Amino acid sequence: ILNVEQSPQSLHVQEGDSTNFTCSFPSSNFYALHWYRWETAKSPEALFVMTLNGDEKKKGRISATLNTKEGYSYLYIKGSQPEDSATYLCALNTGFQKLVFGTGTRLLVSP
Amino acid sequence: ETGVTQSPTHLIKTRGQQVTLRCSSQSGHNTVSWYQQALGQGPQFIFQYYREEENGRGNFPPRFSGLQFPNYSSELNVNALELDDSALYLCASSRSAGDNEQFFGPGTRLTVL
Image 1 (cartoon, rainbow over the protein chains, first blue to last red):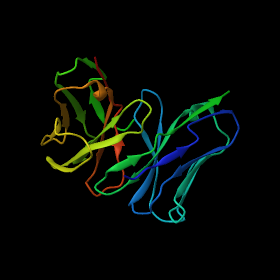
Image 2 (cartoon, rainbow over the protein chains, first blue to last red):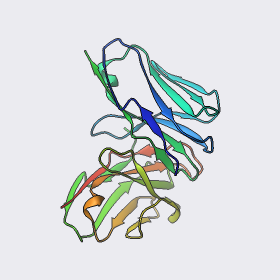
Image 3 (tube, rainbow over the protein chains, first blue to last red):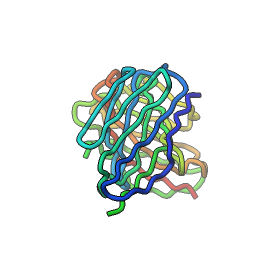
Image 4 (cartoon, each protein chain N blue to C red):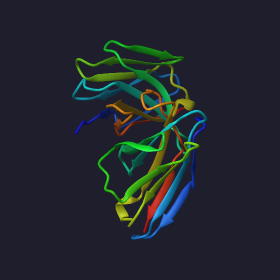
């Protein structure tokens, strides 16, 4: 069974702080790694789809890197804002769109 | 928003009953996947439908079944409900079975008493 781990489980930062989370996995046998942002009572929103070792993606203040050889992906948020408060999920696409999710990192950004 | 809708938003059932959850895919999407998120867990893959046929299944018993209709909307049916079936059920649609990007609905919260 593929086990996707995310750390930390939760994080509380002040507005303006930069932060990062980790998604780790034991195997490079997957098609893509996905990052999702999930606000309470809303739909999970796709942030990035990463497929290649060394991939780096950026969207505004949020960026992500992927290292398949060592089995991790980092998500960075520069200058956190209260609207960044959400749960951030990573998931591995193991084929046929089957996503194996981690348990998420819950971020709270205080003004 | 993702354009994927689910109904109902919340549902309360008792043990042994049957439930049907519904998902309306984003326009132009022919693939839908269903996930169960139990408390404190990440979403877990239940199954996927592609062009009205089941196209992959996770580790869930046969009492979890699904349908996909010609308009690509979908249903998840759960028979003989158990207390552990209490969870948030998410559906996600994509343009095709080989497309990496999935668009999620907001989920249906099922409580089994």
